[in-house]
Length: 189
Image 1 (spheres, rainbow, N blue to C red):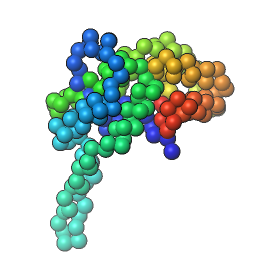
Image 2 (image 1 turned 90 degrees about the vertical axis):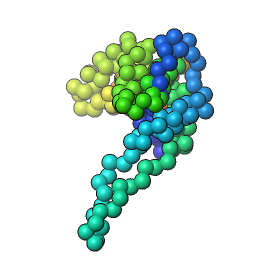
Image 3 (image 1 turned 180 degrees about the vertical axis):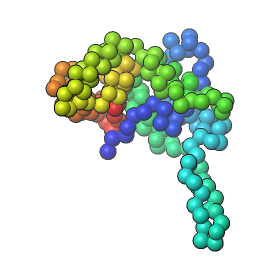
């Protein structure tokens, strides 16, 4: 079973500064999950369920389901996928944004903002052109691939880009297989 890699998927991190992002290394697992957990703990509405309280047989209403505990396993998996596939500066930009412990700050766009700052704009444009060609035909591919390409590290990028030379109906499978050789169980679309 693949774990869908979405940068912002119930994760969070705080902007220390552009200099840190530009020259920092990939965050350790302890730092990554520690900062995400700090956001989770600081912001009680993080990770809450949107489920409506259920009516009870006596006419009352059941309490809203309890907030789940911070998911250490999901955090570990996310760290593994991000560090194997994505550019260090882009990962740090996301984490710095999404770990903000000021709960009034909406961190839902941190993944989009980090990807937009990714180093591979030209390659993402190449992918978008191929996507447009394929979309016009009978079988396209997931356009999330093109978004993710912008933030891939150089190793992952060099292995994923040849998939765009394949026929349209083979691109998704090629990307999935390629990503799984780099980071088993991870997915970029």
